[in-house]
Structure formats: structure tokens, C-alpha cells
Image (cartoon, rainbow, N blue to C red; front, top):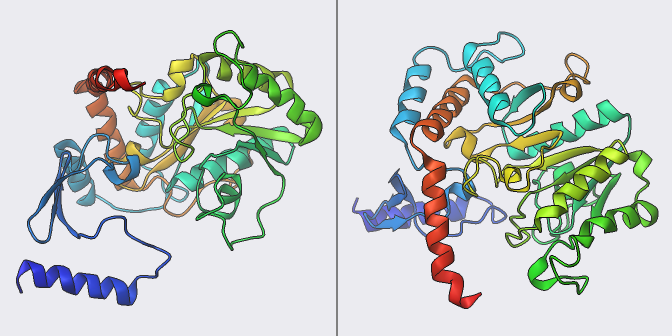
Length: 350
């Protein structure tokens, strides 16, 4: 079978056996990938600007990730961390706690996907505070499960015809868009007045004493890659502290080097109570987690959080390799250089 016929056969199989609700953005089928390049079954090469939707910050098939996964596959691939724990899990938890922002004791839980991480962060916050309410931001994206779909800001395609939504979720209007300020103000003279609107929100939309957590992306993804003013999260953090609300930073897309910092919240010099991580932490394998203050993480009773495949050994080994790559290969400095070059080229048009 020649490559063109193979591509046609795969197209026909996809149309016959894969549901229409799971579309593919590109019309080709991947045969192999390396670094930033994809090769399809017809032999064409493409530069991959998507990286599996922010999953491959260390590139496709990084040799260190591949070697770690191969080694682990020959030892054991699954025991369930709730039955028999293993070294890769605790080593990765240690390293994640060491690099996550915040000068306080931390603990980490591993799950499979970003949606699971956000769901568990909400569960932990609810258990810690004894409150039901959750605040997310308009235009946010937090996942596709019932709770995270409810927290997500876009109706189409994520919520359309999937209701009813989960209860006790409130969306705070995302005023923190200085380029086109919804409040008609001028930064920095406004002093990030967009964050002060949260106090009004507690009067008209959600009572602060019933809110367990506020979940925010440091840089919105689906919302248009909107970067808030520096003081925005400083104020939000202070308001959360004032009312005993757990502040959760969703770093699933923005973490692990996407902004030339290991965590995007570092740009704002703010440490969240809990941080959700996923995507590029696993170097291509399913791996996600929640990391945060030890006293909050320990609020949950034994057996209240976890999962059959959470923190799979192969994924944890891949995660440890990703940590090594960031530490030894100076990826953050490279990201800084690339970002600076892009800013210079885009400068005349902004």
C-alpha cells in the first residue's frame, strides 16, 4: 500500500469509527515526531506549533523522557499508588513541592488529566473550608468534566447541549484586560481596579462566606492569552486571604515554561494556596496533579482523593525526566530569548 492510499484508508476509518464530536484540526495522520517536527504517513514534515496543546514543552520524544519510560516499562507499569506506592511517585512529589511557588510546606497529589486536577483542587478546598462555592473567571477554560465544564467560560463547544451544569459555581467577569479595558480605565493609573470588583461580586453574585475557592489561570488560554496587570493577582490574593477563600492557580496550560518561568504565577510574585499542573509536566504521557499548602492538602480524610491510575509509574518517570531537562538544559532561558525576539518583531504592530 502506498502512502497516499494509507492516508485515504485512515481517513475512511476515522469517518466510520470516530464520532463527529471528536474532530481533528488537521487533515493528516502522524507517523513519527521528533523535537518540534511532525512527519505524516505520506512523508511530509511539519513544524509543530501546537505541541499537543501545550503538552510538549520539552519537544516530541525527548531522549531523556524516552529512556526513562523504557527503563520503567521493564520494571513495572502499574500497581495503583493507593495499594502499593513506588519511588517515582514520591520523588516527583518531592521535586514538584520544591519548585512550586510559595515559602511554606507543601504536598502533592497526582492524577491523570488537567480536569481531574481541577476537580481535586475544588474537593480539597471544599473539605478544608467547609464551604460549597467555587468562583472561576469568565472566558476561562478548566476542563470538560461536569464540574470543570461548568467552570469553563465558553458555551460553544464546551457546554452546548450538555446541561444541566454543576451547582455552586459562579463566574467573575474578567475585567483584567488592559488592552481593551471593559471598565474604560487606563493602566497603571487605575491601580488594577479590576480586582476590586471582586468585592462587589461578593454582594451581588456569591456570598464570600460560602465560597471555598477562587480558581484562576495566570494567563487565560481559551480566553485569548490575556495577561492581567501585575497588581491584579496581588489584590485577588489579598481579598481571598481576607475572606478565608482558597486561592487556586490553574497552571495546567501556563506552567512548565510556557511563559519563560516554570510557573506563570511567578511573574506576579504571588504564591497560590493550591496549584493545578498537567500537560507538559508529563512530557507526552498522561500526568496531572495538585500541589499546595500541606495543611490544606491534608484536610481530606484518607481515601477521599486518589484514583486507580493516578501518578502512574511510567508517567512519573517521564515527569522526573522533564524536571531534569528543565534543570539541566536551560529551557527557561531559551524561552526568554525566543519571547524577546518575538516581542521585537511584533513591536511595530502593537
